[in-house]
Length: 114
Image 1 (tube, one colour):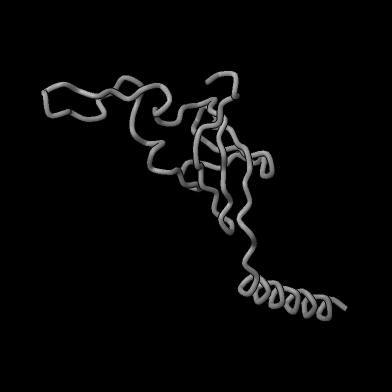
Image 2 (tube, rainbow, N blue to C red; image 1 turned 180 degrees about the vertical axis):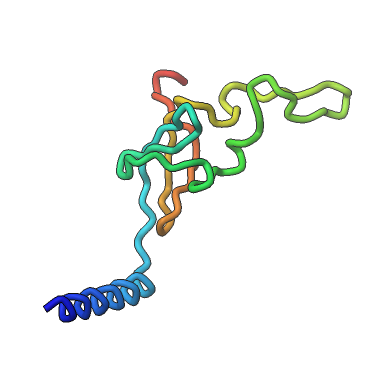
């Protein structure tokens, strides 16, 4: 009986593998939060994901608030405003799941905080 069960498990594994190769899921949007250790915890996938398991759009890596963004032609410097700063713990974020890879798109704030 155990041999028969192993055969069914192998068959199911092969079917699962082939179906996952053919099926391309839709992109899904989700909300998330950046934890103290920079893990990503989303609404639909509440297991925290370490930094090396999710992606971040480049704009969210510019730097800390009030860091120099660039030097302008007249010798002055442009600084990063609060609204353009990089991610920090406690940020609520918009996450796009592209296949099985989460990508943090932007920081989300309440409309009355604008």
